[in-house]
Image (spheres, helix red, strand yellow):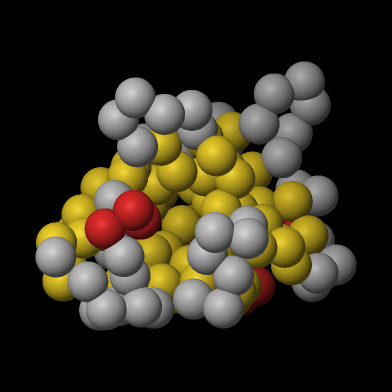
Length: 115
């Protein structure tokens, strides 16, 4: 019954910015972690950033200093602000919410960065 609805993907030139949104169907406090994975063609899905229910955040080294994860508790929404985008950031981005035994996943939103 948990739904994660993603939006904000698109096409952007290198150096540009995008803001991804993930709206959950229930309070994001229901989940110990929420965050973002991405998967590029031919590559494994990798963790980009996550935020805990307590407010702590982690960002992958590959995007550190460029991507920021944040939360709007009232809107049940997690955001990923992506700045200084690079071609290597091109991927499908998936929102996730930690749950046992398996997490919930959004449907994915395409981010394409052109040079």
